[in-house]
Length: 92
Image (cartoon, rainbow, N blue to C red; front, side, top):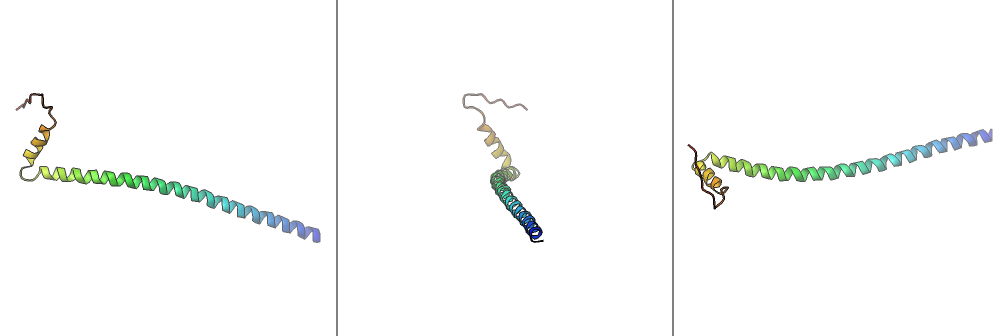
């Protein structure tokens, strides 16, 4: 009877140890995955902030085209795209 109790105790100890090891491995893997997601999130947040700043500047530039004198501003901006040694041709 004493040997049977010892075997049962060892089996229970092995099962508990296995569950504890499994839990520790799972927590370690989850922490690695969480760190990777945090890094990806920070990268994406940086890209979003850069693109948002670009969007805001383009929106303000677009809005300025529809104010008084916006057409002249557009034409003056277009002048800068022509190389200085080129002749400007305007088609009407």
